[in-house]
Image: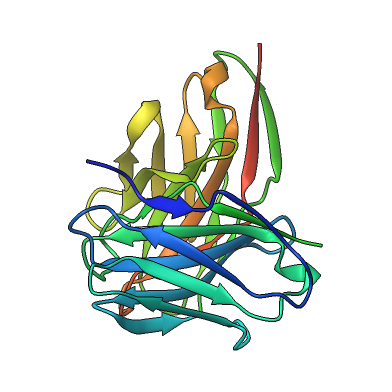
Length: 114
Length: 115
């Protein structure tokens, strides 16, 4: 069974631009969560989607948005990029929402804003 | 609100020596507890989790952790480490009454195994 796939793996963008990151969950998994990982702040929850609906949202500005498609694939978008948005963005999938279910993480997308 | 504190940001240890990575959490409600490992340029991999029952939890790669409710701790241990255990380790909690998969992570402990 294939794991969680995140594309692209690396990305360089300029301040002010926007970016879209993609996450394909494990087959059969319907819950997808996104996290931002930075050296200073560690891992921070962005949002979670289940059945195309956002269920939870972390404390991030509105420039960060996401969506989930009917095949459970998810995208996150960051508009008007700032230098501080440089981070590793991790996607996690699980069969369904529920804090006792195991979340499987992708390898992440390394975003660098210059 | 939940928070997680990993007391040691870096832990160097010699090969075949025992190691303990400390984790304390703060929560107003009951929580589930997890340890994840992250190898360079990789995502997170689940080592073990505590949901309920026995407070001693065994995970993959010879790791185990003990849940201590009175001390709100969930320390990770391994009796004999290998070079391949060099990685970043994250402790995480999730709200027992939460509506989904929202983890609160500690800032991580970098374990370096010295040959």
